[in-house]
Amino acid sequence: MNKSIPTSIIIFGASGDLAQRKLVPSFFNLFRKRKTPKQLNIVGFGNTPFNDEAFRKHLREGMDQFANFKFTEEEWGLFSKNLYYHQGRYTDLADFKKLGELLGEIEGGPADRLFYMAIPPSIFPNIMDLLGLTGQLHEDGGWRRVVVEKPFGTDLASARALNQQAHKVLAENQIYRIDHYLGKETVQNILFTRFANTIFEPVWSRNYIDHVQITVAEKVGVEHRAGYYDSVGVLRDMFQNHLLQLLTLVAMEPPASFNADA
Image 1 (cartoon, rainbow, N blue to C red):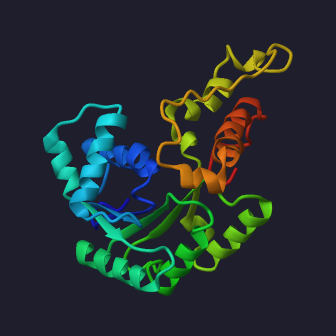
Image 2: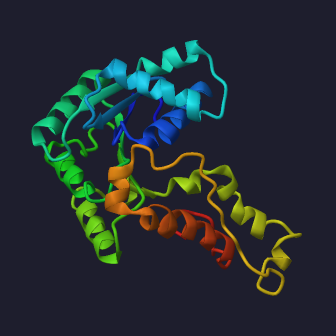
């Protein structure tokens, strides 16, 4: 990130489970460690009728429940003053124009922007269209990036359609498709444990391993995500991404390299 200009992170689906449990606690932890730009703005966009204060309260409650680190109220106060919320519809051009105006007011000049899609894949095309129509993806004085959360489509055909939609307004190097399980420290270390460890590497094969069992031991249930599960389902939410990604890392052949284009 360019620390000389503001960075804005816009979370679509900001009132949902992922933002409260994972995203904002992670951004806050980076902020505490001084690994973010001096001016980091986080702007939530969603249908829930929050104002800025209600949004901050909602996220603060999530910190008590989900943060795995200790922090002070002073630290939270410094971080939360740059949390904003814009209520809007994902299909409304006027709401996206207002979002652009709000970002301009907050940033006060050139800024880097990261748009985080914490939403079902069915909504993604609308958002990409409206961001393009309102000029919010133009790299004018700062970079633009889009992070797309899993599931990326519902099958191969819809995933390809989403790719085509994204490439209408973005270059490939502006798009980050993410399964947040891959951000877990243990998961990130699997490949190094396998291929860089002379104890495990020689015996990590079918000749010595009888079977692989992967358990997802969740602490929470469906809770307020019933609408999401009705449309996506647990197989697409957990199995075809989280679990298959873990299985792939456990069973794959050594990669040619560890860079992004490998």
